[in-house]
Image (cartoon, rainbow, N blue to C red; front, side, top):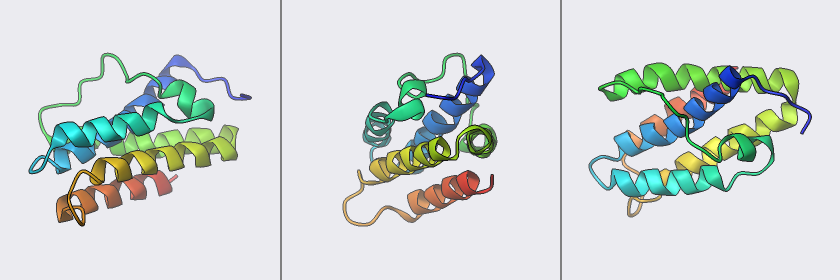
Length: 134
């Protein structure tokens, strides 16, 4: 690994990825948010490379707020900031992080039978948009 991250950078990456899973779990509240969170978490902890090392643990001390909107206010900018940081240091690792988050949100969405709900589909779109905004 050629990237050295400051503690704040590590927290941003963890907040972004684990928060994305939390957003998907919140969007799937009509189904089984626990299963969505479990599936997304498994995807994050199965990552390789720098993302795998950083995302092996969820962020500590992060307060996501009282609503999904407050959670999104923290997570979506953190996704963009994470991609910007990684693109500057190692574009290949930025791609790895992006793919890891996308796999995690796809895994979280798979708890629905058939197609994901419109709510989960829209949340996945917002997460992808935040990743691509960097």
